[in-house]
Length: 292
Image (spheres, rainbow, N blue to C red):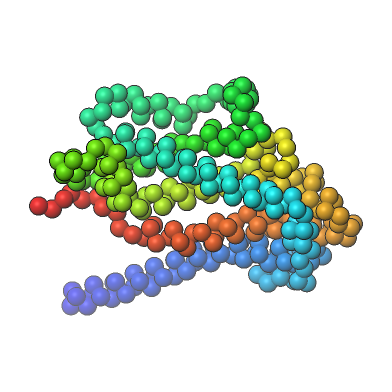
């Protein structure tokens, strides 16, 4: 009787769980599908609020105007380069810093942790940061985008916590076998940290891909802009459709669905990469001790 009750309770839980999760999926997907529909719809349907989940008056005007501009592809290439280089540098610095902080016997460890945590709550401000970057000669270069944001303290603390939970016996055994600190990190720790590394890579890549304010602040040459600044300028009316030779009717269409097109063009690359990283999110993390 108890088993039957438990079985009925478990089935009820499954039903409720399925209904709740389905609702979450619907609420999550609806805005995105609506954005896709708006990006392919005609201006009159968008302005009248008739676009829901299906495009009305299928139209590619805004897409055509944007992708026909050579500067769009130049800026898109810049975004790819900035994201790849910045993510690689950020991962090297964050991994090394986090691994050092995970060693409880390290002298000055507490000070180094507080130095990192302090920067989460306090910074020099916009003008001092600009003066610093300018005085270092980094303006109008990739380094103005990469170096000021090279370490995310949140990501650093997450990796530190992960490294602290790795079994210390593994590193001790590797040290007995003759591996030095770099050998232990490269041959023992990193292969066991694929899940957290993949997660941090995605976090950094998304952050750098979507970033526009640093480029807007430190870059003055159009050919150096990332695509986010290009698309921001289209929305602001500074560049884009008019520079690409669009007519008045086309400009009206662009004004109607430029935000939707902007979102689609910026999120598609991340959506394409995510399935290859997702498997690491669901993989198990080794948090237990070595079994003797």
